[in-house]
Amino acid sequence: MALTYASYLKIDELLSLQSPRSEPPEHDETLFIIIHQTYELWFKQTLHELDRLKLDLSANRLYDALATLKRVRMILKTIVAQLDILETMTPMSFASFRERLDTASGFQSMQFRELEFVLGFKRADMLKYYPPGTHGYDAVLRRLHQRTLTDHLCDFLAQQGARIPPEVRDRDVVQPAQPSPALQEELLKLYRTRPDVVLLLELLMDIDEGLQEWRYRHVKIVERTIGSKQGTGGSLGVEFLKKSLFQPVFADLWAIRVRL
Image 1 (tube, rainbow, N blue to C red):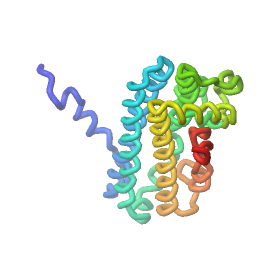
Image 2 (image 1 turned 180 degrees about the vertical axis):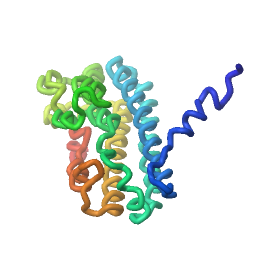
Image 3 (image 1 turned 45 degrees about the vertical axis):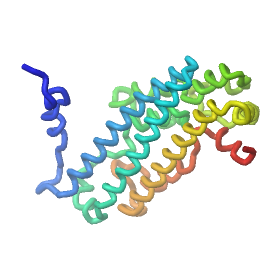
């Protein structure tokens, strides 16, 4: 049988994956499912791109890294824009099927946790929500023990002549990255002498800002929809989400703004 658009993209299987649990079906549950499935696809692509980016940085492939960062930036813009669609669902519409979600919660998204770990927002205590043997445990554990994007960025910076401080170069990768005044001095030197490297660093800032924008919009849409209620699946809802607001991925790049 000849390959077709439908068979290549597995359209029949794809369109069969939306299974509302409300009975009779609540109109907005289909939207809710499709939006979140789409997020998971974008998370998958973002992880795919960041894995490529880490290799490019360590191999000193500046222009390949720039191209990948531009793509990740556009993905982040897209997932933020998708919240505009979700926001057309009223609190009453969501309440009409919310109980059907039972113990399911976006808090359980394995890929978003992977994304946080890849970017350096490591929190080993989050593994308690992914017990051994459950979906996502192996993937999240693997990401916890991998070097982060910041570690690979340091490989690249070293090849540009930057002196990477020992506390940065030899840090325990299971721990979250911490700001380093010594690294900030090296970044300032590059900002003043290497406009090509600055292009890369500013794209990283775009990624950081885009992720913070997504977090903020996500918190506000949850707050607008359920207020201070506990999240589905027993998650802590808005108050938990607020704790991660304005947590920078590249703290050193933010810290040097005042000196540029």
